[in-house]
Length: 354
Image (cartoon, rainbow, N blue to C red):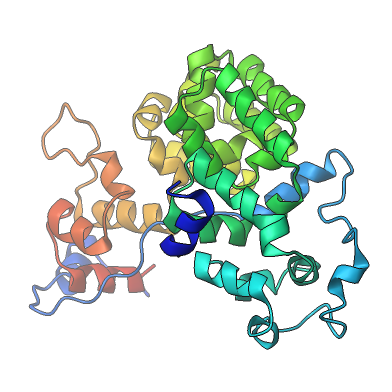
């Protein structure tokens, strides 16, 4: 892959007394049960997000191939097929494989296989790949970028340069631009006017200074091109339903912008449990915003286990303080042994009572 890239860029139970139940469940053992996976990622498919963005302009995500004759080499291509049948005869596919593009993911997306097969690597792709490398997309991430957004080859290079110049004019640093483009492969698909409106929306809605807008866009570039209706819904939820003040909303946005990308219902339910059931204040949530991004089941299990052990104490001014971040961080085994000072056998038995 690096050799190919270098050639392109020229580099460039019943109720029991709690104490009895605790003794029965937490008898010391020597065997530790394996822990289960931790944080849920809440990562939505980037292609679906971009389709939502484009629907706002009523544009097609994939226009017809402009030259049907370019598909003559593959006359029997069908909507659903396996790229493997074409790799040996397609120089373009061979080059994409060398760059690390995952063809099996592309072939699952409607219209994309036919589009890719209609491209010529030298004529339609080489300069775009050189452009991405010049922007700073790491060689080892080019394959991932093109897997997520093969439609980049539809964009005119002059338009791509204009969109880069726009970011530079807004005083984004080179490393910030690289992160934006790498973390959000669809950013460059949007016109400077659309991006400018999006940045302006966040600046006006959350009363951000220029440097704060740049911080937000760099930290979570996907949010800038995310579905605005969803962003509005989560903004209303955070401010009106959850009761955070405007400055607190801004603080949450800049510290954990991904809060605005998770499902509204999940956000509402999680806050209700943390604030109403656990009695965690707004100020404490602001200090540990990761709680709002942590799976409900993880918070319930860990808080419930501490309550079962009689160790629920989240006030740092008191003895036996348990940091709230421990409910969101680390593996279950680390939480049980280092925070709860118990063992996995006790924890697993406790989970069976839920």
